[in-house]
Image 1 (tube, protein in one colour):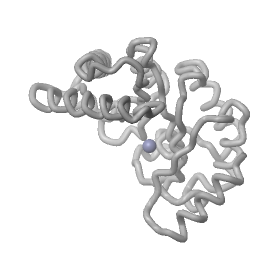
Image 2 (spheres, helix red, strand yellow):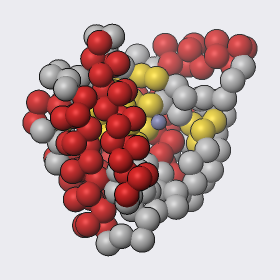
Image 3 (cartoon, protein in one colour):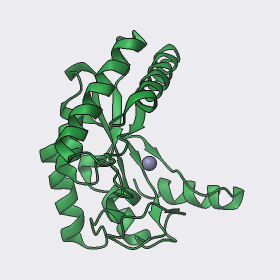
Image 4 (cartoon, helix red, strand yellow):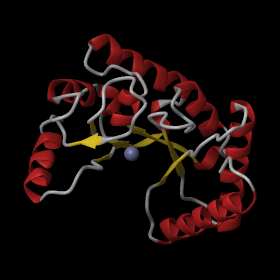
Length: 204
Ligand SMILES: [Zn+2]
């Protein structure tokens, strides 16, 4: 979205198509990554990304479907690693379409240490302040293959990565997260799918 020329045009049109399909299907929100700033100054990149999201909403002729912007691990020059920056992007959407998706593996790789009580509380407080938990329509619950702060986005089965089962469970059991739908974006495997589902159900 923050890109140039043909790339940006294609991004806007493909997102508009997704929005129209998501609305036609009656879905609750459409999750999208915020993209990359490339060589741009961060403020200009945010401005351009927000304008692109708004244009996609217009072109799609949708009226209802919220656009849930996802936080990133910060890989390359991706936008929304910083919670404040993510909040500014969300804030830039039209009020009635404003939503967010929190990905646990991305937050961890971006430097939020979910293994400590202080780290979990800090992330919950920052998301509350910069996004508002009422806007978080979905959680991407993933463990991380890569260390905290690595800036590298690699998902791992729940409880088998660097975040680990106790930390993920403690985070998900925080009352502010209650009732927010949870999706795992995990490596394939039928046996692992079952274990991941069992884990998620144990998290209340
Ligand atoms: Zn995700």
